[in-house]
Image (cartoon, rainbow, N blue to C red; front, side, top):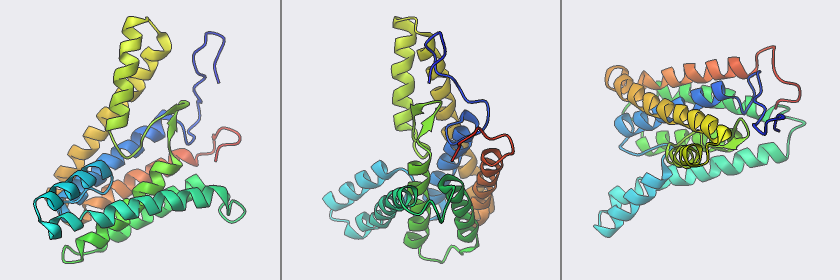
Length: 232
């Protein structure tokens, strides 16, 4: 939707596409990646590109044990996306607000993960985190009407760069606003990763509860009394 000047109308209330919610979710994405890499076996929960690369490198070097430990995360991420699509398309009569349900389920899952000791199989823990990441990425994919990724930085960085070029070359005001939006998302991911790294070193397996708290805050924003009509 655009206003008379051709720029998109930005919703005032927190919805699945609000910038406040997107910023928190992206921060959670960076946090969980740092946590899973540092405390749960050196495997990324969100960055499946990295997992695919590390699998390929391990296979090329003949280090199959090292290569295969990235596979559960990749598979669980795919299953999370499939599950999110199934929930969105099918049982809306059962789960009337699938996006809200996804936030609740992810927060609860992170709380459970925080109770699992370091001796618990890392592959299973990361698979749980990757499943949640797949659900989150599928449920929350737009901000102000623009496509973004709530669990990664690469796509958001690319969009920021494209829009920055258009803002300068074409003096495009919408592109300028898009640049600022995606720059914030990139910074939020980096900040979340830094916070996740520091927290993991000090709080160890329990650090993930901070991410659960951020998701609870996201839920509070999303389900506040001043939601936009028709928000999921």
